Image (cartoon, rainbow, N blue to C red; front, side, top):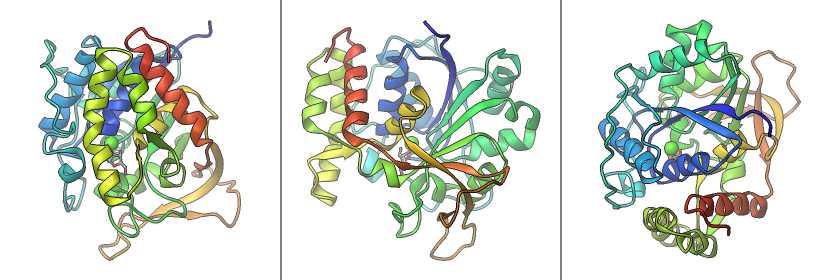
Amino acid sequence: MTERIPLVIDTDPGIDDALAVLLALASPEVDLRLVTTVHGNVELEQVTENALRVLHLAGRSDVPVAVGARASLIHPQPERAGHVHGAAGLGGVELPPSPAGVDPRPAVTALAELLTASPTPVTVAAIGPLTNIALLLAVHPEAAARIGRLVVMGGSAGRGGNVTAAAEFNIWSDPEAAQAVFGAGLPTVMVGLDVTLPTVLTTDGIDRFAAAGPVGRTAAAILQQYVDHAKDVYGTPGVVVHDALALTEAIAPGTLGTVRRDVVVDTTLGAGRGQTLVDRRSVSASATAVEVAETVDPASAVEFLVQRLCLLDGARA
Ligand code: RIB
Ligand code: CA
């Protein structure tokens, strides 16, 4: 078997974040070495507690959780997403508390030390606002340069926004951080709404991992608020688990079709704030270009997710 990819997940759990973490834990291709938390869907204390409890749910409270940024870099995030993820961030589901506490190091320190010490290139999956990654670039640029692959759930090339007409939530939550990250020249893949919105996890798929055992059943319960929200707001019989698709790309590089594009983030304070301006006129040769995910096979991506989540209970879908 090929060597497992060292993986860090920077996250703001968050219902789809929880699914993404569980997906990583179920995937033999990756070795989840660290989880760093960032403000976003709900407040930092809550996302951190959620991260600890999701790891414990899967029997992996050994994975260290380091606490990151409480707020965006420059301008306050206008609002959280409790109305989508539930006030406590996990769809109203109260998970058992973890026996583990948080890592004593700040997230940026823990991430920098892991990157510096790893003999193997580390994949970082950033599935919340990019504040921690921007701080890593500012405080430990030499460690940031060692990132083997940065897979970002965020932005949109041509699908507009979800939190506003122009902006996707993670970018909108800290546009200045996103601009710093996209402009840094790191080996970055942008997994945006163009590929996440078509990738719908239906209740049939949810029922399959719910039937696999207690972990799958709990994951389905966490998703229920997302299912209800999607039905109420979009009238769709399923949910878009944005972060889980980003982790699928991190676990199985090449799942998504990408094109090197120049990406600029609107950091003005107007109606376009947080928009990712993706130049699709040409394939970019720039050193700071970003691999923008533009194509996906939704059925294949959903099947990958469902089958892996079933493995968490030792079952095969
Ligand atoms: O726009 C989707 C992103 O915003 C996901 O990361 C979800 O968790 C929310 O934070
Ligand atoms: Ca998220």
